Image (cartoon, rainbow, N blue to C red; front, side):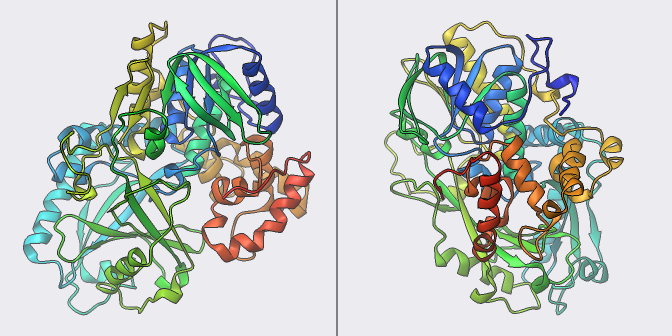
Length: 538
């Protein structure tokens, strides 16, 4: 498989492959166990940790990145898959966060990941529950959001202008809306990921192409300024990884490795519904939450027969689970908000899946504050970079849209704290694996769905099915993911078990019935691909 010039490690003339495999993981972990020291050790392989890894490797530093589970195992796979322009933060007076979000959105859409991030239209229906003053405020907000786009220098061709819709236009885009009292709607545009976990995979593979060691199933038992004691979760063997600097990017779990990290985790829940139950949606929906001035429930068509509905913003106390449960109260809340605007009755039986992620929000209550005294919905999404007395850098807060800037700030702090010699940050102009100009992507000889997920690698994924028709069949009847995509996940994307391929490299697993139906095929693929089947993880 060939790799474009921008995916070469700057210190080598030979091409370094971006493919992640079980064999590569084994070899690179063994090198570290033998005493190889790296410039940077990154703990956590969500979006931010993968971003730090790419930033470090592309600056010419040697880097290893570890995760106790898998790429995007935590919060990064449970997002709404939206790349926000910062409108909500503008409304709350967080001008710096709003502008940063708009800038990072433009970078993803136009430079680094145009294959993964596209423009998503949204309709805000003006129902009887939306007063005329609220509608006027929403219009002003959308105009301000368009000014944010312009200030970030994102082109109009990337994100069209917002505008008002007549009642007929509104119902045409969303026939599921209740017609009684509908005064029209407001059309806006924002960035939308084809898949959040695939973004993390692309960032990690791009880092691997620059020589980074990407080590999943490698748990950090303890950290200090000179490295970490780790355990290979596949073998149980413990070893120490030596590093000149350490970055803790474990999100809501950061406080378990470094003392004095105060977080206020917030749970964001999404429901999974069948597309057929919501009619022919040609846009997402912003459905106002009754009694809230600037909060909405999102209705997000996925293009695969499913629709996501979210999301909540509820504080979480106590121990942080690996995979958060979805309480029935969240499900009931989201269904109630849908019922306030839709013309179809949706009940608990219509929910075919649900998932929740935990936002790693920084506790801003102060040392004398009592956690839980304010709503997590009101806590700033601005990220923070903290350095411990022994030099471990921890990055917390923020959100998926700004992962690249969070990574840059964290690595800058590590370079400064440990006196590393590194080049300037390059990631704002560094295309991820699969990225190309829109014209190049449009000309690829592959199904459009694959191009939106794999970019320039889509023809290679498609070719697997052309060469072997058994790989071209859907993994689950009625779902577009093919067996070839599972094979690609194992051969090139570091998938080690059935959970990796079903829950993160693809999204089959968000519907429990589909996951159960796909397990046998996933296990067959893993057995065939050199016996890579490993014990099941959630």
